[in-house]
Length: 329
Ligand SMILES: C[S@@+](CC[C@H](N)C(=O)[O-])C[C@H]1O[C@@H](n2cnc3c(N)ncnc32)[C@H](O)[C@@H]1O
Image (cartoon, rainbow, N blue to C red; front, side, top):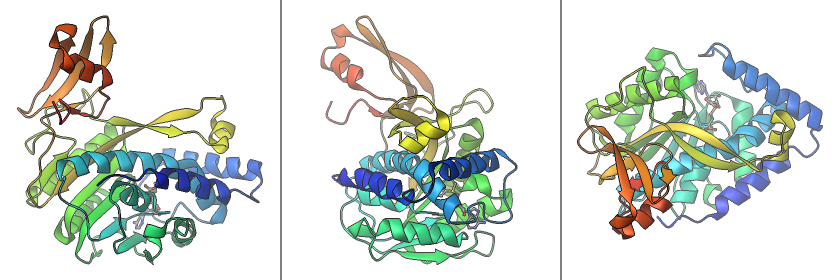
């Protein structure tokens, strides 16, 4: 593992450069149109990313956020499979390739990479942006429609990020089953909403039925203890805001938090976290309240107080989404 940090910065610079020459008003309008489309009825029957302005706006506006979310999911996965490095990666519905960048940020080295998507303008732009990342210089960007007819060549890792939302229920199921048949490991990321979580749980069930072990975020491969409709499992990744963000959303905040749900699973044995922090820890005077998902298939709240010594210090440093207790405790 040993994540090099550089890809995040390189990606930010590369996507910011896409807007050079695109009048700020036009970029903002393209983002507005995309946001409206993504709020509309899904799944879609034809690509939403239609032309260069759409794709440049998508990449500049969304790619840094999906990169951070996928990267956080992959880091949690990597912690559960410390001796494993993917020897090949296929990103399905990969668009402009945010997940390919996240894989290179998680595991050093070069590997065969294939990005599949039905939107040619997204693939073209993804290929262009990827020239800034040496680990992606040989990636294949291939036009492919996800559906029940999709087949995937065998590979180590398949990622599916922010895609299930755009598919019909049969296509979602077929994609997860096809990914499970082709890969040693599958990582699925969706928006951190109740619907996104529901799609992740549906995929999680299918991966388990296909013989996979859940590596993250869950401490086990049994049923999720969250009662559907009452809550949803999601996490948060911090993303630096670009000038385009500030233009579209207003305000001057330097960052925003991308909420995401995910599941990472493998065909081979995994060592999931003993428990995972599933809410932002609450720091009180002399104590920290941790909401945890436990190996015993239940949620619990643990109070870690000053008298717990080094564990208290660790609790003060704990973040939403972390394994608990930290590995070196
Ligand atoms: C929200 S974007 C996510 C892109 C990328 N995975 C990311 O995380 O930034 C959804 C992608 O799924 C692709 N997509 C949606 N339905 C598809 C289908 N039926 N076949 C192939 N690609 C599809 C879109 O073209 C788009 O690139």
